[in-house]
Length: 552
Image 1 (spheres, one colour):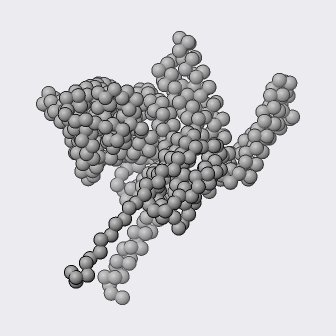
Image 2: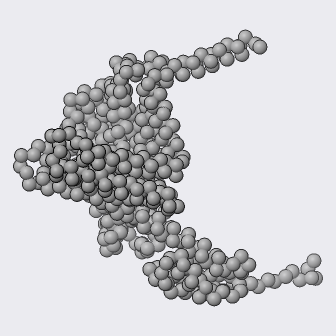
Image 3: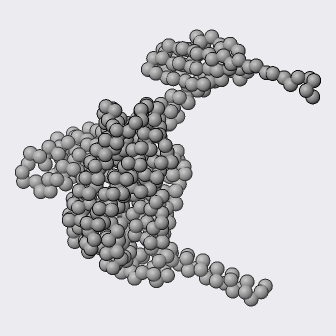
């Protein structure tokens, strides 16, 4: 063995020992466990659902047993007949409910998910009622402090409760995946902190062997502070202030007008490439990130200034696109224009994209090493194109489509602000002193965005539910028609249109289609309802001209 190889192996072993020692503390080990657990939940959703369902009905059953024990063996001072009666009643109801959940989990093919959905549905009803009570009390009681926070919190509870009651399966899946992602992020933070601590990159005042996770996280935030000089540099890019305040704002408005013009003409021409160009030059991302930075730093003037700039930019964008669409010599077929159709029905996935894009944009803003990625963020989350669609649809009198496009912009705006706030705190752009001494003021500013996000989630969830139902129905319809035609048929499916009580099947090819009564019976079995069937067969004429023999 050569000396150089031996040194390389020794260095590798030393690094491995150093890495193992770095995470050989309770905080890092908890982070490692959290990361592994979150990954397992994402990779094995059925197993995670079964485990959570089991934990839920065991907890409910245990709570019922404790209530019954209290009713039968409560302390002397608690042995009022009324208290004992209600404890006994709660205990019996809890046991019956837990038994019902256990039966559903064991009997139904998707019982675990159904059990969780039932629990989420009941919790949604309770949460909505509780939120309504909080709002009413805050509005009617003059002596309550922090009315704004209570009202926005109550509205958030109502919106989440309505979602949980109306779409329990979607909310359950969102909660499970959200908890898994949060566990992975938290775990990676704790493990990374252990590695940085072992390498001596940052000083530490927390003891990972004894401190709890919140203390360790606060230590991370304090030691991630980027410093006043770097913070001032970033502020110069996010806020259009002196020196050169007027020139900076003039340039911003010029770029906004140009990007809106490009986006509007691209929408009218139904050109994806040109829309991407409008995304690249659109300047709305900067004041939105500036708003998030001002919120977490407690900069009220900058927050108001950024919010006003965004609001004026939105109004000007819609008005300009409305005017350009009215004067453009282009006849727009809104129902077939892909740039419009793709932006008038936002779904929950659009909010997820905006959350990820907002986090990426905030991280690229703080870290100079990845600042070049901001262009990709601009493409990933659309800000100006939806506003252009709003103006075009308003000009065409399509108020509903304009509302859908504006909802997409509002979704992107709120998601970017919330994600950027979280990233700015974790990457050190937020001042630790402001987070510590102005926590209540920062929370008061953030909570309305959380409430708005919860309210926006209601139509997004229902749109997603409708899209999933439509996609599922289309898949079932395709399978039914393929089975009806058979493998040897010369006909192929060109299009299937499924309406409330009518299915239209367009076929193309050669041969004769089977009797439509069989297809009607198959659809009745799958859809559990009677539907009318229309079969359209487009014949194919094939003419072949052979090569003349004398030309060879």
